[in-house]
Length: 409
Image 1 (cartoon, rainbow, N blue to C red):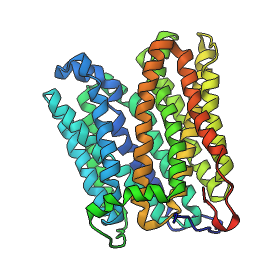
Image 2 (image 1 turned 120 degrees about the vertical axis):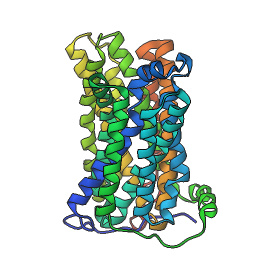
Image 3 (image 1 turned 90 degrees about the vertical axis):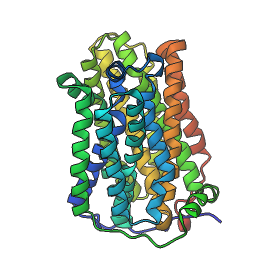
């Protein structure tokens, strides 16, 4: 037995969620997702301030990601059995308290523990994406998820340069103080703005978690979409982990220049709502192939013998935009596909989807660092190109669905 989505007709306009609420959810997702990435450019100042040895400094960026991964598997599925607004706000409050603890930390161990809970609390973004999917009209779900996801991706892309600018102007502790205040305010706003949503009553927490593995076995759409997005997000992480090194080594950019380059890459977030609209029109299959080709084109472009001038930086920026557009676009296509399944399973399906491709991103970061250290940017480009090509190979084996069972993989 497999889980399949039901076909639906496309209304002329999105229904089921007001535009202001959709924009609020998009902004909230961006602000919350940024919490995981603020620490990445601040590893040096934080480790120096807290006396963390250089060989352990990588834990500063790792702990929020580890907490986020744990939350995806153990917290996000609760959205299938716990009232969604109450759950979202409770987890967001955990993030706010953890941010305060990080800002006040006097010892490295305290900061690392706070980082774990910052990541755990930040899984609120996935609950809000689910919230948007539940509120959206079924035939406008792709558009709504696309708009909310664009906010999430914008937060990820802007977090690093914003953290650098705040630290230069004040201190690294100010980054966490400001974000804690934003999270507390956001919790109040969401408490007022979001309507309550009580999912259907189901089994207890243990049975909920135990049901996740069978979901993978009987949901081919989940397996395929997770595989594709894991390959693409690994390529994304591989690129963004190492491109600052290339910009500093070959183009001699300062930290401010690298931050501005990251801002240019943020232009790709506009692919999310476009992908959602395409999926709502039933064109998700060609859009999937196009997303993979965009990621492949990134590494073909960036692997060229780039001139060490503004032209070379411009080509690299174009490659970054193609990469972000492909990865963001497919994330929306993937979530739209799994959200078309049983509404009572969305928390678990989304938790599995996100946790798996998030792990792929961690693997991509490791592969990027290794490739750049052993073969420079040339080896990194070939490694990066292999990932979307692997996804394309899987995509080419996907059978065309019959009209009566759209979405079957």
